[in-house]
Image (cartoon, rainbow, N blue to C red; front, side, top):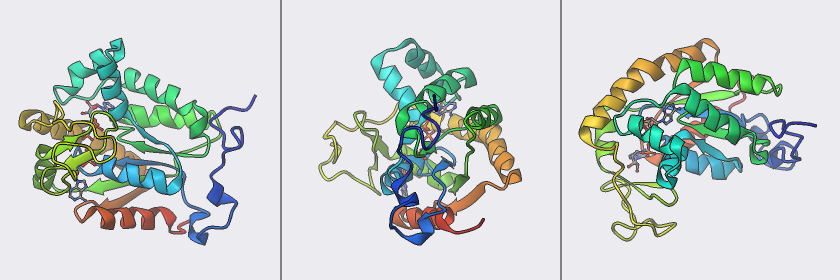
Length: 246
Ligand code: ADP
Ligand code: ADP
């Protein structure tokens, strides 16, 4: 039986591959990752891009927080790491991603938000996809300087129902304290406090920066300046994804 990972199995190959649509989308990568340091804007951009391309956003951070709220063993074990700004062990993350990619809605493509974050995760992802004759097609690297990251993270407020993120100054909700979409009460994430933010940034430099070099060597890395208004960032990402480079 064909695997749900293969585009034809679920009969859900992305419609723009076959139907009328902007010609530039025909070769557009539909399996790509959004990387960048904490606060770079991955979640914000992932929501916009997932709806533009009609593919699921797969966010390991969202999945871990959902598991912690549900009180599962995995969620509670992961929280011991996330609360200290440390990466969760690769085995736990890979089990989550493997299960998520096997669902039929990933057949037409997917957008990975915040995964892979270690070289081991990148290698395992490669193996998972290769088993299905697939490969990651592009890796967007959102670049933002440290001072701006700290400003963004310390003012971030998040909806625990739909995970949409806001900023107290830069992107306030329409009604203070309430999510525009799900109407959940906004919270400050436990890991968005200054000491933990610094640890997350250090962990990023230690363990995730090598992933960028890894993808650069493979010719997949596409850098985008994340330090411009969100809609300009979206346009720059789309430009990188839709350019006919190959
Ligand atoms: P990440 O998922 O990379 O940690 P988020 O998308 O949650 O980042 O964004 C972090 C914070 O920065 C949020 O408060 C968000 O509203 C804000 N933000 C996102 N993109 C921009 C941007 N282009 N300019 C200014 N602030 C932004
Ligand atoms: P941000 O990009 O703002 O740091 P995320 O929601 O992507 O936020 O991640 C929050 C936390 O969840 C990380 O600090 C880390 O502890 C954990 N996490 C998320 N994705 C991964 C991953 N791929 N590998 C290991 N830990 C992860």
